[in-house]
Image 1: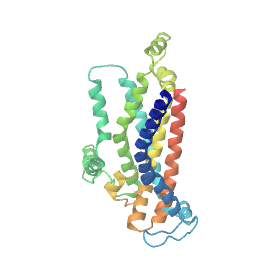
Image 2: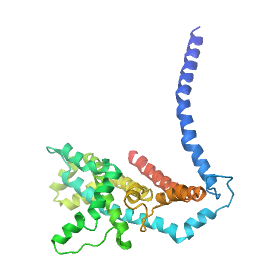
Image 3: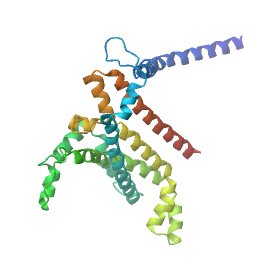
Image 4: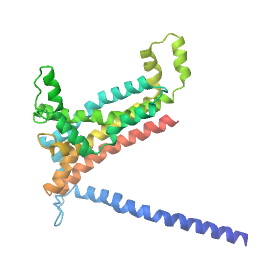
Length: 291
């Protein structure tokens, strides 16, 4: 009798578990796995959104890696990778400076994170005014006798100008991650280094950086995966014009403006692979840090 009750209880428990798992699994299948598989299949066709897709092999992928206009979209991402360097350096330096406890620290951290929380439309509007020919930046330059260029119209300036927005928008998030990492370092290490006569730079080089190297590497990987997925700021500010097209903007234009869903699918697969590689590396680093 007791065994029957235990068996029934276990059966009911399994039914409850399966019942609660059914909806998430169906959700994953419908909105994740099936679209991914469909996307892969479409990437080998000339599908235009209507009609029957025609298999064309690797022609879509060949176009992505051989035609200059599509290669340029990936080159534009390099600017976002480049600006990640001063972004991370500034965030780390700021975290080192304020590392510790002082009055108003939480307020200070909240202020720094505000740009990251702002909507992309708001950020774009702010910097359209900032980079305008008679906007904030050129007005400041005119005060010291410098005639500012047309930041959003000159081909050699528009991409680095838009990419530089990432420094302002994301350094707060990087600061929070670096600051959290620095807070885990025992103060005894710094005290011992100070007794031995170590300079501030030596403390940073031999204590701070090695102690948070996993956090640093994760931030680098996030910057890489983020740069390949850039969309809202260049799209809202320039609509991808004047040479500011990124891979995700190109996907949107190919799929919805040019009716080339097959090509858009191939391009999305390339972006997906790059992001997956970055995420896998991030997981590896995180697991090593936990060991």
